[in-house]
Image (cartoon, rainbow, N blue to C red):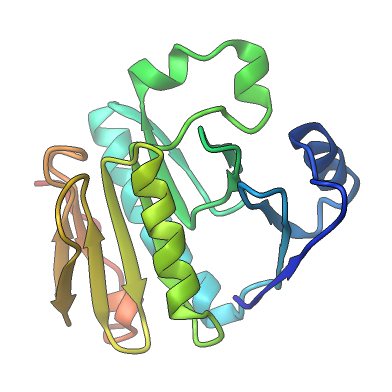
Length: 200
């Protein structure tokens, strides 16, 4: 999806951002660490289908393992640096999720997910998404995937390691962050007619 960054004086606070989101539930909004408002357009149908494949496979794995909680692209997280971000898919371990208070879980959870994934649609700026992935890393993500559906490349982000670039992979593993998770990319790449869910 394409995004528009609005610089609103004065700095948009977390409280006012939450109020803005509540007043405009039809909008997909994020807030940068500098208090800039980021307005994103709705995804196209094909991108929405691919995102559902990603989140669905992650959800199915988690249903089998019960190790945490899965979140879709409408979920906001309040990162330690002050930004409010909505990854296309995210996962948080049970321990970290239930360490939050009930009030914290009802709002934008004040943490960075253990795992995040971003899908690049044709209108997305690659450099902006890469900066977003680096922001997740700086705020504590343990594993991140930037999936470029146009080039069929995946950038894998891990703490204190160089970004790994995989060209045209058929699968991705969740490594030690999502043990046993295997993401099948055929449907995300658009190269098969039926998705297959798998837990190793």
